[in-house]
Length: 90
Picture 1 (cartoon, rainbow, N blue to C red):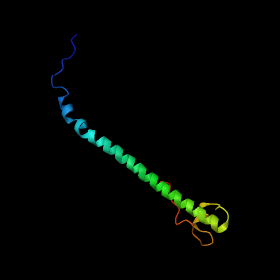
Picture 2 (spheres, one colour; picture 1 turned 135 degrees about the vertical axis):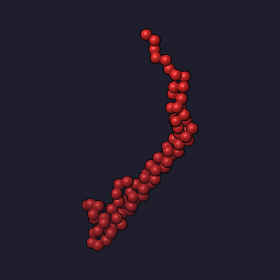
Picture 3 (cartoon, rainbow, N blue to C red; picture 1 turned 90 degrees about the vertical axis):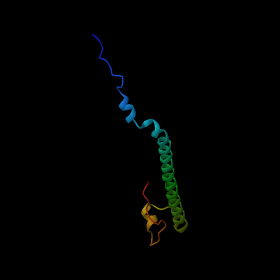
Picture 4 (cartoon, helix red, strand yellow; picture 1 turned 30 degrees about the vertical axis):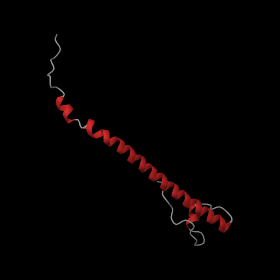
């Protein structure tokens, strides 16, 4: 029983159609950098929103000498808004 004979050019078309070697060498580091920068931007937004909540709680405490019972109290207490808007968690 002889094994089937392979043609000399088998797999050659696959090698030519594969775009990986030249283009992916440069695309992968860029994609990783873009992903890192997007994560960094989300973290900055989260920090900024946390600072807004911290400032609103501080103003509420100065005004009423107690901490707010809920986020709704920061949005509207006696027609005073300590927080401009309720932020979504990014």
